[in-house]
Amino acid sequence: MRKIGFDFNNMMDYNAGRHGITAGELRAYAPKAGQAFRHIASVLKDSKKRVALSLEWANLPFQDKVSIAAIQKLGEEIAEKYENVVSLGIGGSYLGIKAAQDALQPPYYNDFPALRKGSPRIFFEGNNLDPETLSSLFANLNPKKTFIVVISKSGETTETKAALELAEAWLRKGVGPKFARQIVAVTGPSSGALREKVSAASAKDSLAYRSLPLLEGVGGRFSELNMGLLHLAITGVKIKEVLKGAGAMAKICGQAGLLKNPALLYAVLSVLEFKKKGKPVSIIMPFSEQLKSTADWYIQLLAESTGKKYARKVVLGEGLERWVEDRSRVLNTGRTPVAARGTNDLHSIQQNNIEGRNDKVVTFIRVEKVRRDLKLPESGDFLSGRKLSELLKTAQEGTAWALIREERPNCAISLPELNAYYWGALLFFFEMATAYEGELLGINAFNQPGVESYKNYMFHKLKKPGISKAVAEEIERNPVRKSRRYML
Ligand code: PA5
Image 1 (cartoon, protein in one colour):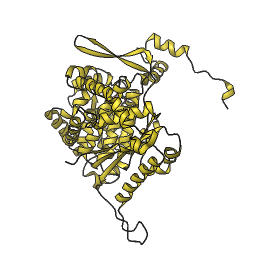
Image 2: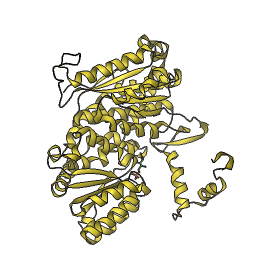
Image 3: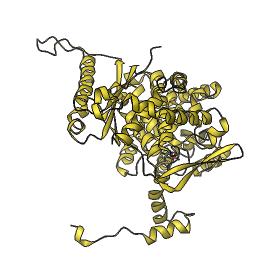
Image 4: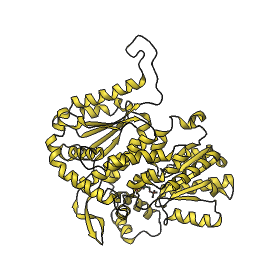
């Protein structure tokens, strides 16, 4: 199996000038990197710690084969029976699946039966509250030929809950009282409104609301290799290939030694660029249309994991450690991720990348061997007889070169090809890099307290039972001020 390549040369001073990292800076940072590595390693080797601190995702590549085979079988059954699958979920319960769909299925999969090879069309909903998309979808799908997969770890997320209730009503009307046999719920094992619904419905009819449990200690954005498995199976992807790729990367990114471990090196260089060279923006730019959604997945991974207000405090006790917010240390840290794609965005964001503020690091992702190539007809001009893959590769090299000419740091990840194995490996690389980056920034990368405030506002305004008095008062006492002067 060929290896994924990581090229960090363009983040170093000999290419990026004073905006690059020197060998001396890297050496000086090595003790801190070693500390971060050892702390993560100590958590990963202890199953209790992994679960308690939400790092159980790191064990997903090594899941029990029997459960995987059962998920693969369920997916195949659904695929055989239904023409359409609607996947409901948001954030970590959506972005990984969308990324898998686009990376591992051919472009235009939904549009052409020949590309689907008997697998159902896949539609993504419940990732917004915009009524237009769901209305359009339900007006055009046949409920008798449609299966719903609803994914929500908490089982309480408003977007997913609202979409599910509408989907249930639509199915009930279209197929009658046994509609819930056309729904699988992927949710937390023991709590939440969705789990309660599943338990109540399946007690009456064992085929209604079948469910798959999400594992304890796996946060949404780190859960593609858990919550996304049924989707992989439905679309005919061999789950074990994805896990094999992730497992191989787990070994590589579990190695001590900065120059052996690409996830650690990526995190260290990124943090040095951020802290020492004023680069708070991370642009992730695959030169592959099919990896654009993987870049979108990474946006959530980096933003929710490292965009934190408070420093983390490690509290020790009874053999386990706890990570708590240190309210006395406000950091407001984390790099801002931006997704772009080559070559499309060379005609958009690239102008700013080259001549705007030198506050970014660009990460390219390349695919060395495309599945299907195209050769241009012989025409006598400079494009004559060239392959599109060659043009794409040269455009990426040109983009990196142009950035370097302006001392703009960048790096490149090269996948030998885009398949289940390498895609699983790529995901795992980014997850490990994010874990190390969180550690280097001194924050808890595995929670997302900042997402709660808009939810609390909505719950209070919509009168959801159980909202605390303190939250309600905070919202009422702090309205957004409006002056007519600035309302035109
Ligand atoms: O990373 C996370 O934990 C979040 O982005 C969640 O995935 C997202 O909020 C959806 O939550 P849930 O799966 O509980 O519906």
